[in-house]
Image 1 (cartoon, rainbow over the protein chains, first blue to last red):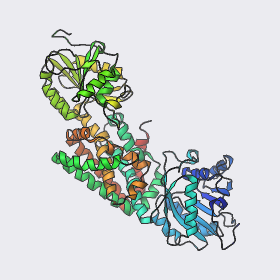
Image 2 (cartoon, rainbow over the protein chains, first blue to last red):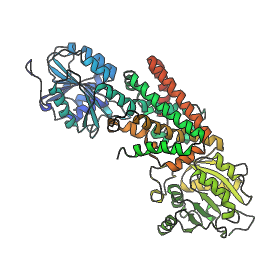
Image 3 (cartoon, rainbow over the protein chains, first blue to last red):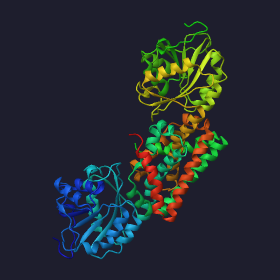
Image 4 (tube, helix red, strand yellow):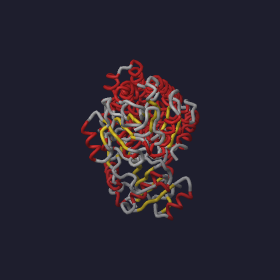
Amino acid sequence: MLSDDSMAQSLADCRVGIIGLGLIGGSMALALRGQCASIAGYDTDQAVVEQAIVRGVIDRPLDLSGSAQDVDLVIPAIPVRSIIALIQKLPAMLPGRFHVIDLGSTKSLIVKAMNELPDRIAPLGGHPMVGKEKSGLDAAESTLFRDRVFVFSPVPRTRPETLELGQQLVAAIGARPMILDPERHDQLAATISHVPHLVSSSLVDAAEGNNDEMTWMMASSGFRDSTRLAAAELTPQLDVILSNRAAILDDIARVMRSLEAMADLIELGDEAGLRAKLEIIRKRRAGMYL
Amino acid sequence: MLSDDSMAQSLADCRVGIIGLGLIGGSMALALRGQCASIAGYDTDQAVVEQAIVRGVIDRPLDLSGSAQDVDLVIPAIPVRSIIALIQKLPAMLPGRFHVIDLGSTKSLIVKAMNELPDRIAPLGGHPMVGKEKSGLDAAESTLFRDRVFVFSPVPRTRPETLELGQQLVAAIGARPMILDPERHDQLAATISHVPHLVSSSLVDAAEGNNDEMTWMMASSGFRDSTRLAAAELTPQLDVILSNRAAILDDIARVMRSLEAMADLIELGDEAGLRAKLEIIRKRRAGMYL
């Protein structure tokens, strides 16, 4: 146990507490096995906690009753608005001094809540850029974060030692760290994740408009890939959307302006103009994911 | 050789001529090996024809000088507007009686051109729902059409024996036949292929609007899949778009109405409304591609 005025400085010494043992939290526990002092876990579904202990994903249950002072690093791995509610209750749930690094998909509102925490709790916003079509502990895997980007959004009061611990965490799970302020993170996340989900959904929605069952039979790999996100689990996604409204609306407006510009060129039959516009886009996209 | 008033009735007896030895034409030749009497091939790039012969993809060059009467089934596998131009010149290129089944991605304009053909040429519109990120003969493979939908759009003058030959062709290459009139084909193709390509491109275009290089570094698997089509080769795609303008504009308008409705719900913070809308879409999409 740490003395009242010191905090764990190295991941190897940390007793980690993970809140939420789904895909992300379960994968984090698996990725951290053997790289920290111990792993405790909490889930609203007690059966999941028991399963995680039986399978050796975590060492023990995490006690949030307010009486146990046995964690040095708390990692909330639950939907965004649940993280915000949790942070408000965290001082009553866990005594003593500890770090908090969350794994929520949007950062501005979480970081705002983190700034209200008492001095004994040292916060840092985090967001691993991962996802899978499956969810839950059964889908968790130790390699989920490997070679993936892990964004940190420090708050004004984030301590250097918490950021250092975050860097150790990212190294331990094999991810690539990126530091972005919360607003910039949220704008970029809207562009590369939240709006693509909504746009994928709009393609399926438009296809319903054909009122023709043959539509679904004719759909091939192009439609499959461009609408894959529309099949994702909805509850965490709604959480993300409603905690990042301004950035999402801004990006939807840009997508619509782009589609309008393309529709104008198509209506005019302006082949050269359409080619020029699409070629810039094609080159940009072809240069990604090499 | 067939007598002047008869046409080959079975694929096994057909001397096939494939025009365009890229991904689609090359794959068709490979898939038809041993299932027809012979395969001749034409490409605007003479080196590709020679390569196709050396590799055993085709048996011989296809003579389009107007003097040779040595094919029973002609399969144009080139971009849509090239097919239209070809069909207009076909009577001068090939004497005698033969079938034509094209593989173009839109059907209305091709079928219109087909209706002008002389009686000795028996046309049928076709469209295999396949695609790959790579193009050209090097990317061709005999299994490209296996288990994929192959749409036929008969013209009013399509003969029963040409449709029967088409069914044999589809069976030979392992595809699944679907018969749709040209306008219905083009509306559905706009919805499941052409507009998803444009929408994918609009996501990349909107991302440029961030003016932030971190956007591209942060992009993960969701952005990768939803924008994969934006990296596709442009020339055949422009051909498709400009030969299907009305259906595409109609579908873009539907996508934009859907996005506007989602933006309104997000702006209002109407979680129940957004959940209801996205849940219908999620269920539909989750039920596809099983």
